[in-house]
Length: 223
Image (cartoon, rainbow, N blue to C red; front, side, top):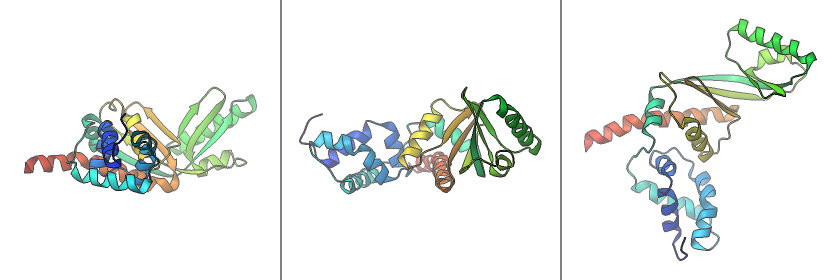
């Protein structure tokens, strides 16, 4: 990249070379401060000096005002607009080493969760069993373990989940300072496990994505 660019020019080049950034900016799905910090190393390299995050945020604000609502991910946005969203609060995760003495504990917990007809996920990495389930059930079997509380969002697609949906969601969350504990795809469903306090923000972001299709339709009808 050539030197001598202004911050505004550098930011515009970075944004327009990444379709995801364009979509995030044009549809209000991004935390501008988080995005500014993310692209700051690139901006610094392009203009040849250290820049301030605040200045990059201002450049992003000006750029976003010039965009019409666009969508570089039509399949993903359309699928999300028609998906069913279910939220589970009070979820916990416990890791159980796969030793002989623990197999009975794992079986007992699985039977308890199945009988209770609650949502749960069991992952096996070969060394440990990761159980994600309501805290009260985990505590009843694994009462000696300290278990953190999480929220879980389940996205249920009517048809096959679109290609690239997991990567898209991870990048959107990262742009909004959300680090997911897990993003899992199973059949037509996506499960996202995040810190409890981040759950409302995640739901708000998903809802903004879901209404993008409606907003686009309104804009097209006015043209």
